[in-house]
Structure formats: C-alpha cells, structure tokens
Length: 107
Ligand SMILES: [Zn+2]
Image (cartoon, rainbow, N blue to C red; front, side, top):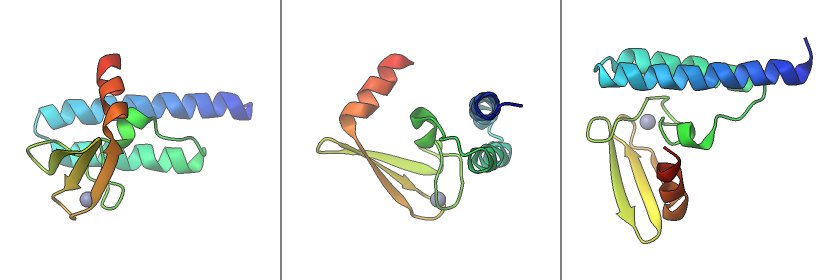
C-alpha cells in the first residue's frame, strides 16, 4: 500500500481510538481509556503520524493516562495559559489559552 494511504488509515485509527477512550472515560472505565491511548500512541510512532492537537491534550505524555478533569487531572488557568497537571504522575503541561478557545469552538 502507498505510504500516504497507510498514514491516512493510521490517522483514522488514532481518532477512533481517542473517541473510544472518551466514551470509556464517561463510563468510568479509565483502564480501558488508558489502553486505547497506549494503542493510539503506538500507531502514531509506527506510522510516524502526529496525534491531532485536540487529542494530545487529553492524555499524559509521561505516564500515558487518559486525563479526565476533576478525576485524574487538574486544570488551572494562568495568564494566557492553561495548565494541566496529571494527578497520576505529577506531570505538568502548559498550553497557550488562545489555542484552547479555538479548539472549543471547533467542538
Ligand atoms: Zn501522568
């Protein structure tokens, strides 16, 4: 199969996995969400495709947990920044606030 076609399929699978992870998180089955994140990250590495921005914010890069605000992560707003702390491993991520607003509009 053509390399680009393979990458496109990989991207689709990543999106599907994150949607599934979100669904499981809502059902309070975070262990499944974490498993889906793990698979999505493996696909991303294998096919060298980036995980879309809106999904990259939803898991911890360090420990791989799917992040649910108020459950296993804390979200704080600082000056022009969104600060996300993973309560599993303590990893802190910062995103510019403007991007966050744009992403919410998309949804
Ligand atoms: Zn973590």
